[in-house]
Amino acid sequence: MDKILEYHYGDHNSEVFTLVHSEHLNKVADYAEDVQEFIKFLERKAGKTYALVNAMSAGEYYGSNRNGDYFPKKALQAYHKTFESNGHVYKHHVNKDPKKALGRIAFSHYNPSMNRVELVLELDNARSAKIVEKLNDGHLPAVSMGCRVPYDECSVCGNRAKTLREYCDHLKGKMNKVLEDGRKVFAINSMPKFFDLSIVTIPADRTAGFLAKLASSEPVISSAQLAEQLDKEGELEANADIKKKIELPLNIDSLSKDPKNLIRDSQAPLDTKTIEKLSEMNLDEVMSTFLGLRIMPSRRDFQKLALYSIGQSKLAEDLDAQDLIFNASDEKVLDFSSIKYDNFNEKIAGLLENSIPYMSLTQPLIVSRVLEKVAGTG
Image (cartoon, rainbow, N blue to C red):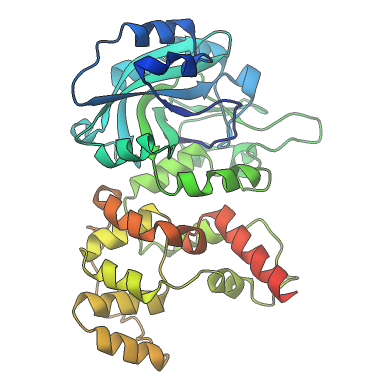
């Protein structure tokens, strides 16, 4: 079973991601002596940037993570070196081809005093130029890991599930919940093999604090579910997946007669200047980047973008002014095969950066917008 393990700032009282500079080794004092010794004698290569990552933590000391995964101390001690043997550094979990990796994991160590896995990354400056630039400017990214496990073991009933379909009722609907008898529900990972450490630069620096603040109310999406969603690579026509992303644990029926409209109306439209710039880009890459940022443009925005892309900007504005939106045809079959995470475009993501808090369909941002809208109309 493949799993994607999210990691947000605020999980631990230390930085997740730190650039390594030989003249500033005092900045990494919180890391294990073995890691500092490795950095001290590291033969730095031209065209490479080195970074420290505070990765996986032992469940006995930190509990389960946000996805409901629990990594026993013995498991991390036994398997953390798979980061070195199997792992590469990727962007947005585009991890099928190691040749597309941004770099490698040069060193992995289990810190016995902090009870966590610490990694030294070697980033290729040519492949990760924009990320290195952001790091040097002080914009720290979010980090998440990919691993494979033979099964998930339920902390409550001990059921061992090799697939999501074999999950017991505890892991299906009560992940990270505390039962009446005091037992917490989580998935025990006793044999993890790590193969992916992904850097997500957008929108982590802009939303990470907000995500941490909302952690107590954010619904839990298991790491196996995240991996399964990413593996679909851009099947935007799958309405069930889109609905799954916007369903909320909040009872907002009392706040609105039509909660779905409340969610939809909380999403801001794209401004004309942004649409103009996006129309100059490859439309498949634009839609793939929307997918990566968890943005589903409204029908109005998509119509304008599509018309702008074929040089019909005047028609787009005329239709918009008349509030006319074409209905989708059931007769024509659309090909979505080119809309996938491999086509994520960093430049396009940069154009959308300021729109992410107002458009993304991630649950915390929807909650924020809906509550703000309700508060403003109350």
